[in-house]
Image (cartoon, rainbow, N blue to C red):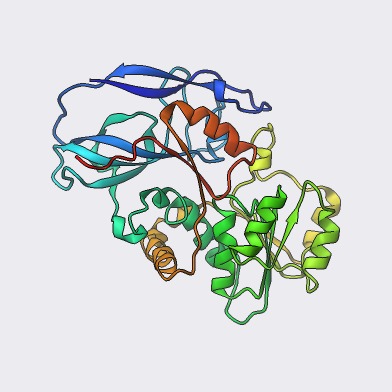
Length: 339
């Protein structure tokens, strides 16, 4: 069987901006037979995420993700349906997901590398497992729970950067659910600002490309800022769960602070902690159930930007890296789920 896949065509360089042409689509032969323990799956949805920019470099700068190789198939978060199975716990028609799903229309995978998902948790919106009811949602929920130090009735103010993105759009809502009295989002367009306040429950939104951010923060946060998800109050907390603006630069992560900012951080006892959701795998299952419950109750509003076609993976990635998405950026490979 001939299938289509996307490979890494070129690297943008550590200080370069990724473009669609860094990827290319090609055809490859998929064997007709699968071995014991394997499954053949058809890809339904693929995810593009900011962390992938690091994988475009020869050295990712971290030990928990590996670089993509030139002329080799690219991988990331994906959802698909099993068409054939020789795995004892997976059957034809099961929906499955993986953090390392090849960017390919159909693929043969080790069944042990896949996790079965229940469509009822997302009311049939399978792509949500790649966004608000998946890793970005877990990153937001667990990050705030573990590092935000928010308690009900604490009257805290939270500021979210990248607030209209996959994590930020969920994090702001969760901040309110968990007890923040005020949530302010920072994003890059007027349209996104309107969305945050009119649909996602943010109390205020700041367009960092147009507004004086410091001035707007003082106005929007009269009691100061207690939690910054990504001029803070004393004993406040900064949660570093990714900094998309730094991924096209050859700088350490987290980027170093200036001496003046470091002095303020120390003086006001502000914690600045790096957060990696993969260190909290024991919290994934209850976290998914909580996110699903909020969604099904109508409390958690989910936004997606969907592009169709494997041939548009590169364009989707470039758009996501330049803020073209609202909510989670998803690429639909195959909507047809019948067998």
